Image (tube, rainbow, N blue to C red; front, side, top):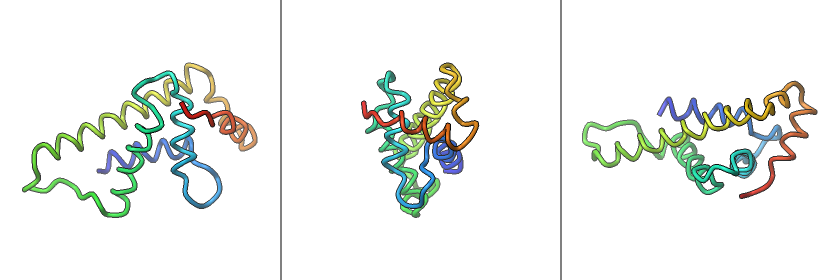
Length: 120
């Protein structure tokens, strides 16, 4: 669970909005827009991963249990693997396209975030 939250925090720090309130739509749209050429990173994929994050944060998913079904454990690891993949793909795309330079100041970042609004 710790790894999941840390990976999701990196996604949130890159793509979250500046204003208070629900950020799910902004984050999922921006990530899926950045990775629109990747069939493993659709808006639905990102929404599903973000939903898991929300369930962890709100206490609806607990850590490993000695009585936990092995299939549940495998599902949790598969979701963690997918989130790790998405996170790495985000960083790779930002570096490969030189778009990481859009994070130098708030105005430049805001303009860049405005380009990440296409839902694949």
